[in-house]
Length: 299
Image 1 (cartoon, one colour):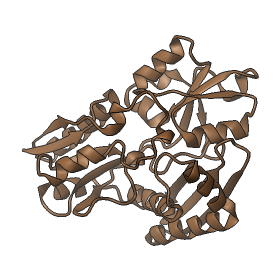
Image 2 (cartoon, one colour):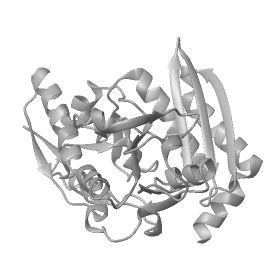
Image 3 (tube, one colour):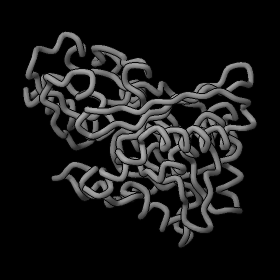
Image 4 (cartoon, helix red, strand yellow):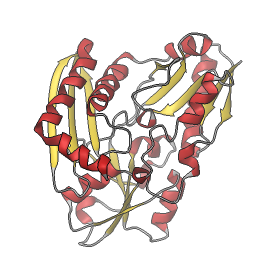
């Protein structure tokens, strides 16, 4: 029986159970092992201020390496671009909606000085650029915790990944879907990452669930992130789509205060996904993103 490692949040367990069900349909028995990560333990401060890569993956990857788990299910946006030696991104199932969503009120309906909550430096920077009159504050916790804080009146609206809301059946809570042109998503947002050892039954099981177009899209996004030297808690957005074996990638780097946004986009063959991402990352750096990122890392 395969052991699936997962975080214990409602969304993480939904994701793990979805993979468990797909493996069962393929004739593979599995069970879920819940692991508490560093990111789950640090709840009192904004994630961007912690400055540690792998906040939601380190302990899970340790379980893969010590053999107490065969595969892991992550939100792909939480998975660092550089994996520990011996581990691979063995499968990327078909992506859910990659967009961000406004919950509570539409962006253009918020009055001046309204308080908007987000746990993401990327979202906060873009919000401040779009609406410098808003009061953008950090909101931490699982999805249900953030929604409860909104309902309790701590925020006028919050920004969440649409994928999580859809997966948990909370689509009706969405006041507005934000297009990638308005709010560029996080690298890998809406996709799942199946991680395993370089060889063995876990890798084979994950590979069977791989979706080639989704993998190409997230490979481009992750290659861009790697070229920028960023982790999941930096003001970098990227969004790739595949149509007719062509891949279109758009990306941005934003100053945390929203005062400046550097954008770029590119298109190429699906077979060149990695190089497309690296090239666009280099282009962003040349346009001024390096200065923005240096200031973020120095802070």
